[in-house]
Amino acid sequence: MRESDQALGRYVLLRLILLLCVFFPIGSSFSFGGRGIGINYGRLGKNLPPPDIAVKLITSSRIKHVKTFDMDPVVIQAFTKSNITLSLCIPDEELPALASDPTRADLIVQRSILPFMHTTKITSISVGNEVSMMPDLAPHLLPAIKNVYYSLKKFKIHKRIKVSTTHSVAVLAIRSPPSHGIFQESIAGPIMKPVLRFLNKTQSPFMVNLYPYLTYKETSEVPLDFALFTAKPNLYYTDPNTRFVYTNLFDILVDALNAAAASLGFNNLTLVVTETGWPTNGHENDYAASLQNAKLFNQGLIKHVMRVPVVGTPMRPGVPVMVYLFALFDEDLKVGEPTENHWGLFYANGSKKYELGLQKHGVLHRTKLANGENKFSLL
Image (cartoon, rainbow, N blue to C red; front, side, top):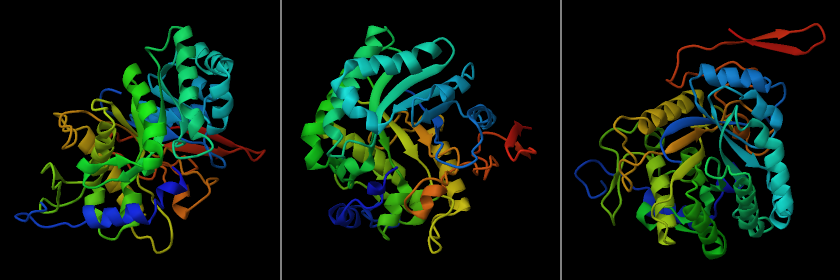
């Protein structure tokens, strides 16, 4: 998640206020394939539990899918025989060299993929994280993606491991009505269309990080309940063009992205929400950022995504959506807004903040050793 998500510009905010955020009661005119719940495993924090304990915490929470922010073999090794799928990420700074030198991709695959092929469920690699709107890195994006893909193909594992890149929701110029969703003009043609063409050709997921919390904070017009999946039946939004009815903000954002992809000619991409969540703390006067709201959002999201039969979104009914919650731990070394340090399901010491609704067990015990180091064990 980047600061660009928190301030998309006056134009986008005005469009949101004018087009999205007027809500009326009933009776008025306003009326990867597969699904699953994953979690983001970041490590920008002091005294976080080591990877092997993190795996035990994830397992105890009955989460079967994990997304990382690097290709660290130590982390990958910790997931050996865990039956948890891994979505890995090549750090942004590696893109320029990776784009110009195919052997760099071979080295990454040989170091971080091949040794674990028979013991770890690696399903995808994101080449960079939210770089599509970075002028210095965006031109390197597609060449880097292709070099990673060709390396996987060389080792005959390209059908098992998909290659993509994660985008910020800031790639959208218009989010509402969702049927009018389009990408920012500066990147639609030169960046997004070629990347989406590659994803379509290789049947790889369209990865997007989206945060209803940030959209809620950008305008006072969105009711909090609508963002938290707790809206009553008389609170909904009707797309004036399609007449599709939306009962939560998450679906609006997902369908705006689906519409933006369709506007470039890609109607059947598999959209994966690679980051979403709600902070448990923030500025002193930020009453939306609270543990209770984080619990409501994540539990509501899980119920929505995992409902049987599959609901999908109004624009794509019955089509499942894979979602990765952000994040596993609070990370106190992250910079930016105060909320940046408070997105975790677990505190930095490994204690759980609240239940997701997927489990009823799993307690981390921390012992202080004589030398000052911490010893972790799962009880």
